[in-house]
Amino acid sequence: MKGRLIAYLGGTSVSAYSADLTTEAKRMAADAASQASVMTMPVLHNWTVGDVLALGGFLVVLGRFVFDVFKYFDQRSLQNRETDSDASKDT
Image (cartoon, rainbow, N blue to C red; front, side, top):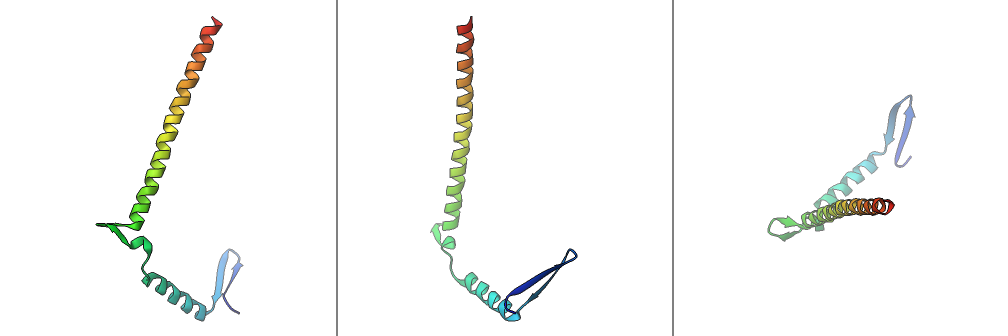
C-alpha cells in the first residue's frame, strides 16, 4: 500500500506509512529549505522583501482601519444633523 493509511479506533488514531515516502518527503523538504527564497533577498540595508511586504500589508490594514473609523464618525454626525433638522421642522 502506497502513501498513508489512517484508521480511527475508539478515539485513538493509528497510522501506517511507507518509509520510502517519508524519506522522500524529508529530502524534498530539505531541498526546498536550502533554496534561496525571494522573501529573504535584501532590499534596503537590513530589510528583506518579506519585511517590505509585511510593512506594506500592515499599512494597508492600518489605512483601512482609519478609513472605517472616519466613516463611522462621519455617518454618526450626519445622522445627528438629520435628527436635529427633523426635530426643528416638527416644532
